[in-house]
Length: 292
Ligand code: SPV
Ligand code: MG
Image (cartoon, rainbow, N blue to C red; front, side, top):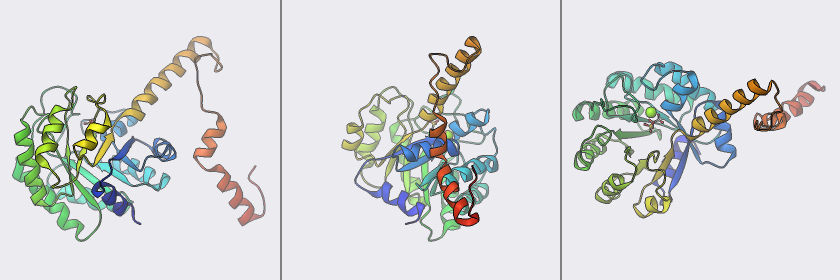
């Protein structure tokens, strides 16, 4: 089954699905090894891993290069965070075609204006005119033809301080434009807005959410509300920051890499994650020798 088809099935199934953020080949492999069924190629996390801000500072081709490494590293489907589509309907559809060719399973575009700012930063979030964003969706769907590739429309209405009613209106326009799912984003500490949205939306299209600020909400609530998929959008990247800072601090202070607080992956774990053993087997198979 193709990656796009797998993602589509996950979105359309009655079960609550989970996508784990990844930002490079390593984090993608770890998400897969820990049992996640799909990956969110997070713009925030990929930008951070590249050392830049989540405000379209990395170009879309630079980000898709990261996605390509992830596609090569795992066999679970990858949903790519395509921000606003990097311009108009034309750049958006070029993005989608390229992402599909690289082997991604879907792209999510959000209805803000380029250059966007990360949804948790400041209050200056500007929404694109609804018809303009709907045109982007239509152009992408036309470009994809009968492909299984998933196109998720994300409304930032609540991030921009608009009402749940406006979010619902926008989502309906995006549904009619051909979106395969709706990502409704909120940065409130509780899930009330999300719950209100889901109750009113019903089952018109699968709903995708990202509980970062309302991560304390039990997932049973999302199940009850008929949410299709949860994106853990930045947790691997944030966990890596804590671990790397601690290791750097301890090793620098102790002038030793065996300091008590430094927890390191054994070298063997690294080799396992990258399947070094496969290379060794194939070395024997194809050359009769051994690489070690
Ligand atoms: C991302 O992960 O890049 C997202 C989700 O777009 S958020 O950062 O929560 O806006
Ligand atoms: Mg993003």
